[in-house]
Amino acid sequence: MKNYFLFIFMQLSFFCFSQEQRLTDGAFYLNNPSSEKQFIKGSFLGFDKSDTLLLFPQAIPDSYYQKSDLEIQIQDGKFQIENTFDYLQLYYSMLASDKGKIVLRHKIFFLDGSTKSIRINYADWEQSIVDGKTAEEYETSFKPKALKSLDLSDEEAFTSLLYQNFNQVDSFLYDYTKENPQSFIPLWLLAQRFHLLGYSELGKNTLYLFNERIKKSPIWIKLSDDFKNAPIKEAAKLPKFEIENLNGEKTMLSLSKAKKKPCFTVVC
Image (cartoon, rainbow, N blue to C red):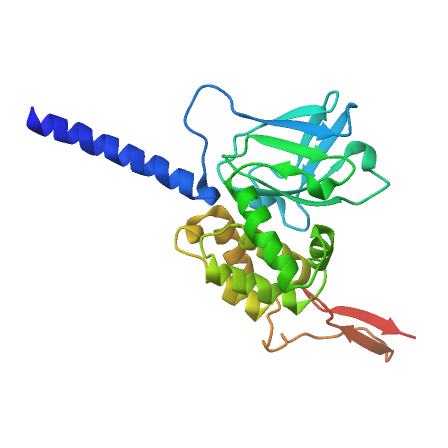
């Protein structure tokens, strides 16, 4: 009987520890096993119409996502998203009615299993509020440090820089990861930088700063493979290639931001 109670105590202790791990790690915050569906409740401030909210990747391949493109129906300014995320997802957003007018709205949404609500400010999208552990880290830690480090005024300026070959962004991601190796936020943005601008030694060094738990995640594994298989690497020797059938014409070889293979242009 004594051994039986000891066994029960150990099982309960293990369960409580596993739940604590879930609560302290936004990256792997899974929904509790339940037959009842979990939903993220959404609403708008200053918008009470019906439309469609689009959540999508930006430059990051769909293979990184559990759900890459979401189309959420809005009824009278309210919506809900079924929360079945097994790991953190990064999304950009716009309305279906925005198509043809803008490319995206400058707000990064981090959704994980702890996300319960989204409040979108229609007049100032950047002021939208998302709850959950990762979104809280982004708003209270990552974003303020990024704006201060890069001398920026707002999130729109920061997200615009993600598309540019601006080395200070990569240096900031390196420094933030070094201080927060358990965070998924710089990992997602590192993936975006890689697929926008290609391989860099600083990016590779940043990748290996993450802790062992992050390195077991689907995102890290995928990005690590992409770094290893990048066809053109910084400081690497140019691969051999042959140029045929130019008929004596002058040719320009362009390697600017080339991620796959060189681009040849015949100059008249």
